[in-house]
Image (tube, rainbow, N blue to C red):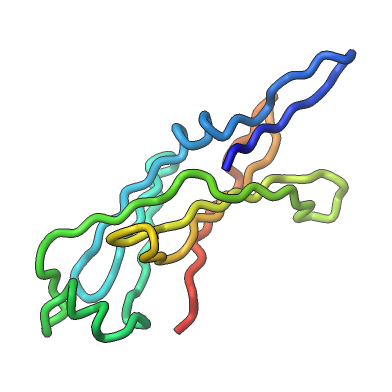
Length: 139
């Protein structure tokens, strides 16, 4: 998806959000770990998150892990570029923040593991990271 946000002052448009710049700034490492876990590391803020894969069906897990829950071989996933950008007034104060969605994928894009949700707020003439969460499906 292509996301741009412009502001207009004195009839002059100014770009204030560019999805390309966002994608370059918000990078992640996705690494499968033993015991049916995936570690997602946000390189920007150095926070890590753990996704528990035990909700996946047995056939999925058997392709990746042995019977002891250890990886058969090292495996990496990835986080897609920005896929959704939504203006939301989280505090009901009349000021909108942005909620950015990026899908976390496992072995291939259809192997969805969850989403990175970044809440961005406006500060010093740019959108900055205010809050970061990982959303997963229940099982």
